Length: 382
Image (tube, rainbow, N blue to C red):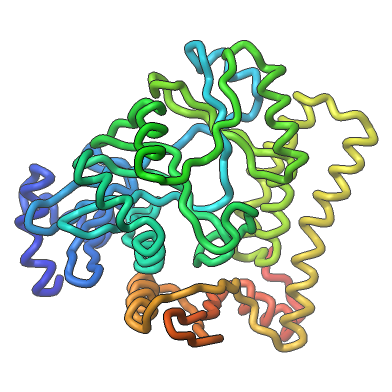
């Protein structure tokens, strides 16, 4: 433990209400101490002491707890809505990006990832886009935490091209007060008042109106969108999520570009979702054959392509195009990746007066595994 960490242990133990001795048992494993510029903070890497995984404690002059966003149960069968919900169901679009909690703390805006880390890149972009809006919002509403999805093609986590967010944007889907999710009407009111974007609210249906819910999802399927999050208007029961056939197969295709990284984790869970969809939608032989062909290609085609690329000497890495507003922002993000142990390469593509465009390449285990396969001819798996 370094000197800085020793200095903040008493503050953190007091905030959590546990002894320093008990706290030290968790440091480095369940609780990780981090720093962004001059701000020390703690990250809960798993559920502990009554706090959710992803909880962040900002350790400025007055410590502030940013509770982890609750995990959302995935729905396999739409009929499950009848049992889970109370009466009305708000159907929101589930966007394909990454979850970010935004807070205004001691005069500055911070963007916190689902895992609980302050991402320097996301923080810089959100400050540039919505800095004044968020500052005014917090002057009125105090300790509320905005929860939203960052989407677009200019981010270091999930690249997906949305017409409404070609580069980078932030769409709010919830507001938290402490560890509680506030009624959705409050989110709408605040977003409208401060010109913040929200995810699309597609419909409000009765919990027994499964046919209307299916119609909404079928339309999303045609639009090649990700899916829906189903919410009680007042969050009396936890939300549910459901994804389209399109995105389940698309995710497999993306994951199988790196079969020894994302591939294994992506495959089975999404195949289970497709099994449930095939059952509930009662696919005929033609529909089954059409989807099976797409699924088979999604598994094999990207994996074979990346093996060929490695055989031709190419690096197997995920590539992201990022926009920074200063060299300092770029250096902060590089320091952040290094602190997390990410193996990466950066390359400056273009420098303009107010922008630095950078390619970030995150190295993949698939690179070394394919290299060994090609060198020895042996299979890496029994």
